[in-house]
Amino acid sequence: MNYYVIAYYIFTEIQDPYLLVAKQKEFFAGRDMTGRIYISHEGINAQLSGVEEDAKAYIAWMRSDERFKDIDFKVHPYHTNAFAKMTVKYRKQLVALDQPVDLAMTGTHLSPAQWDQMLDQRDGDTLLIDVRNSYEWEVGHFEGAPKPELETFRAFKGYAEEIKESRDPSKTKVMMYCTGGIRCELYSCLLKEYGFDQVYQLDGGVIRYGLERGQGHWQGKLFVFDDRMVVPIAEGVDETLTSCQGCGTKADHYYNCANMDCNRLFIVCPACFEAEQGCCCQQCHSGRLRPISLADGGRPFRKLDKAFKQQLEANR
Image (tube, rainbow, N blue to C red; front, side, top):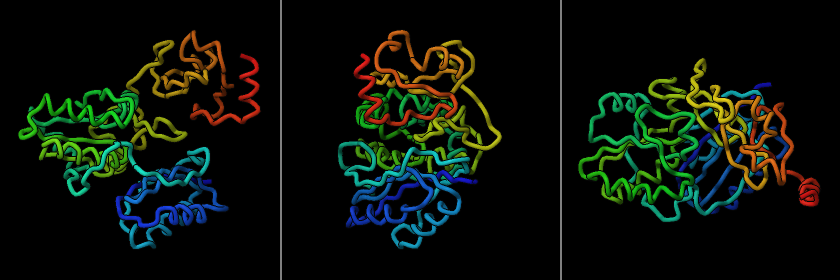
């Protein structure tokens, strides 16, 4: 059975987001689909998956609404659903920035081909920035993009202030990219508010870049927020930048620490993960440990049922 993994976002006024939440849930009832869809007054941010027939029906259903007919759906084939369940909910912010921005100030969108051309021609006044988290950068990034010292999206405001202090906004050309494009929509506006007039963003993010350009100027793989965790950005490409923290062999898959009070993401090979019982360090071997299994391919841990949690607490 063939499945599709779909990513999309759109900024458009939604007068009654709660009604749209209800309609989305109604559409998914009885369908073989999972994912996370967040809806606000300003638009939608969605990552979902489904069996091919249902996924295609969803795209057609969305495009039948005049508000959503121009959505850029980014689609990849997969062998199963890529999420634990289907979640559709209202969110005040589609991306956690904690301050309003004027979306009319968004940066200049570059197609993947235009992005490559600008990368080839960049000079000392061009600043290439990755607006993802540091652990996303570790497994893959564009050539020449420095590692962002960000652990959460909310930290970008401080990062932008540092850039303003170190670079001349009137002379600097900023090239920014993220996974699917939505973070750049907001962060580019923030940089322009800080006086950076020449701000360029990769349209459709790294996902669209991989679909259109293949590996190109990209190094490594792409971190995604679903069961796949780390994926090649194009078919036939398998470049690994990172190593297992246990034995040092090439590895680029993240696992969550089995210690429920730690839960840290760390890169480790399957052999070391199993040998260390899923723990990221010796200290984590004691405490509330989740059962581990390599059979699931190292997908993120599912929530444990209440009875199992109570048993863990009783055994502490």
